[in-house]
Length: 302
Figure 1 (tube, rainbow, N blue to C red):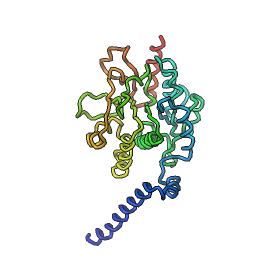
Figure 2 (cartoon, one colour):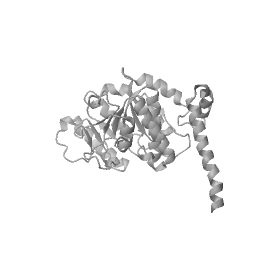
Figure 3 (cartoon, one colour):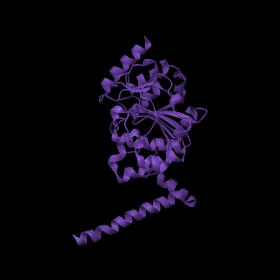
Figure 4 (spheres, rainbow, N blue to C red):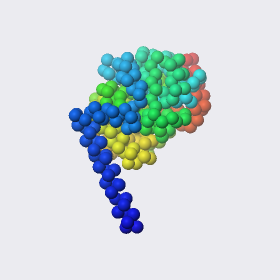
């Protein structure tokens, strides 16, 4: 056993040394050409189409450099799908139609991209690591990693962003509820500081300003993904609820009101005039999400 430990120990130090070298290279200006080459291959989370992302962001950005992002896969982007309902809610909502000009739909696979281009003018294929994978639900583990990587990239490019799940219906303009000075505004749906946040009680909506605090937060999450792979599927609410993150980064967070950002199965939704977005998070299957959100939109049109 002692011999085995002695054999394994050097490999551990070599691994740590490699991590330190990569970090030093990435932070030294004279090494940027070499790191660009590395990032273009296996270490990058940015797909070859990333040059198209910059142009889409410029097209979609508001005057204060804010963009709206959602993410779909082939299951969520097809005829009579969640994407169709999501876009329709923008068209019929109160003061939301113009926000379509600032929306970029991120496709997780080629089939979703093809359909997106038929439904919306600004679509972007984000393949993550570039590995061929099957349909990945946007709430899934791989999509969770891809989502964080993409959010970090957009923030680093200098754009504030609103991320909204595609199973969220926009009934009214939610931007007025986002705090203009706080780094993060998020719909989490919890009232107690010790309550664990799950997919079922999140509002599927957050706003992040492009600044050092939010960018550093996603850098920390990227390191955690390597050290603790199971943390990759943390919701954004789970992240901003962590005291080590909030205190370590001195980050100010606005928790958006449950009366405005509701879940479809949420009880006591009394003041309908205040509801801004509705998230179908309490349904696991896509068919149920489509069915009930469709009914909600039909009631809205009456």
